[in-house]
Image 1 (cartoon, rainbow, N blue to C red):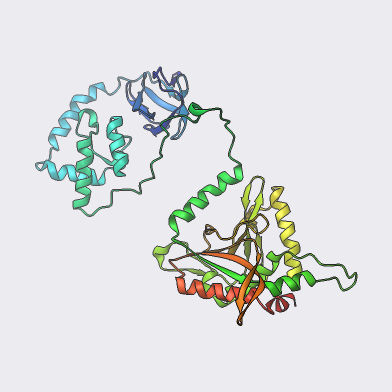
Image 2 (image 1 turned 60 degrees about the vertical axis):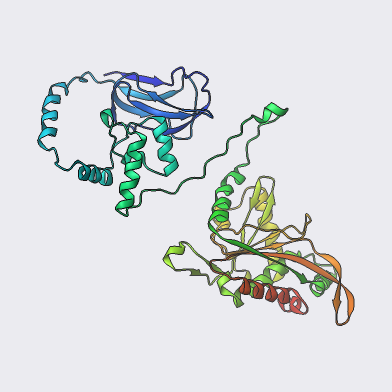
Length: 420
């Protein structure tokens, strides 16, 4: 017994190409010329065959890897008994003749429906056709020599499954659009690593945007009295002004609205179950802008905390996020999230819901405007708010009422109630 390394051979213009299929697995016995992997470039797909036979002791390639000539695919444990089963071949052929079925069409259907075989042999063209239809090619019975699958076999497989009302098409992954030209074809470029935080959050954002039907309501809240009260806060002992961020007031106002509209403080894990989780806690997420990307820590039990406590905690968790010292658990288990652009600029936008929450509040920069009140124009401080919500649970009328309640909570006299 000796180990044999099988590497990517000379594949012409193929360089740093993606592995789209791994056709073997560790521990499997293979023969010479058996297909091992399928690689795909912008122009075509190619199968890489084995140049030896034996048992796979180690598999070094997985789907999505980039390979070039000379890269190690797998290690083979070469067998000295490769001709051991030759004498059995006539017996096996005779056995097949003995169990021949009279109705081949029924036999084909039964094998197709129940076959969960090992890796199927098929051309790259047939494999691509199967992927486009969402078909697992390993479940298709091949009609060519040695069970090799062709396009006609895939068509029959789909037709048989349709006739038997059996699900065959898996969820098709969106195809990647490949550029016809390289960016460097048009000028100087620089390749940089995507920050780890952004890479980790990307799958959550994609899941939220593609699975949740987003609707966004835009409105403005009159926070004139709230701002006057906030700017008037002083320490009773020193007489110095107390600096409390407007976000602390918004957190308390949001909690009050969540109590009145409990469906906003819920989650849907699987819509098919017909169940939703109603949360009895009030953990408000705060989107924090860091050099590494956006992070959303939670202000836990905000309903039981004073505004001064919330303001202090906002500074603390923001600092932990910027230094990447926040506990991972603190980024999960929220009621609803607030994302604010007030310190940067801008008014209305469409924030993406922080799954598994069902709503998110976007806050813009406040500005003074002339508002017509009681027959005359008055200068008021107006805050742009953008409420995105999951339309599967929350309808437009409920969202509008939620916004109206939130505006009242941020408006006249409510700031005084929040302070006590």
